[in-house]
Image (tube, rainbow over all chains, first blue to last red; front, side, top):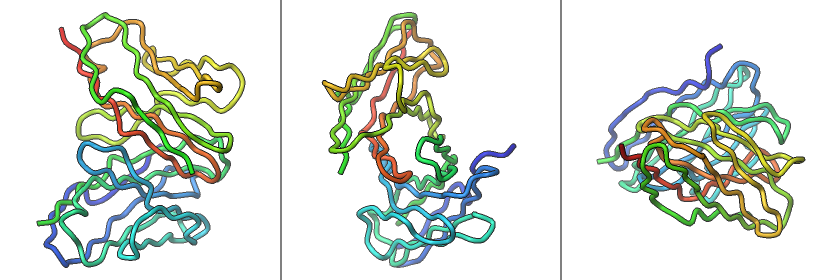
Length: 113
Length: 112
């Protein structure tokens, strides 16, 4: 049973460019969340998708957007990249019920130069 | 809103010695509590979770944590650490929905 898978694992972008990160949730999971983890810090919640709609959003600008597909996979898009967007982006999946375990992928390392 | 404070940013410890990582949280509603571990260049792995019931929770790799509601704490302990326990440890809380709020992390360095 594959866990949460993310792609790409590493990428380098230039300031002002746009990036798309992808996530496939663990089998049977219907809820996907994205987190940003800057170097030396804890992960920060970006947003959560369920039934193809954004359900919760953290304190991130509109440059950060997402999408969930009918097969529950998800994309994170970041427009107009800034140097400060350099971070590890983690995808997490779970079933909808509050007590269920949230599983994380290995992350996508984004470097903005 | 919830917040999590991990009181130690770094904890050096000798192999086979005990370790305690401290976590305090703030929330106006009931929360679920979690500890995750992150090995170098990897994602997060769940160590243990507290949902309800017994305040002493046992997790993987010999770790355990105790929930103290009056002190709003959820400290993580291991009686004897191994070199392989060198990693970053994150305490997290979850209230409504599936959103996790993390602390800043505690880096554990196990020395031989």
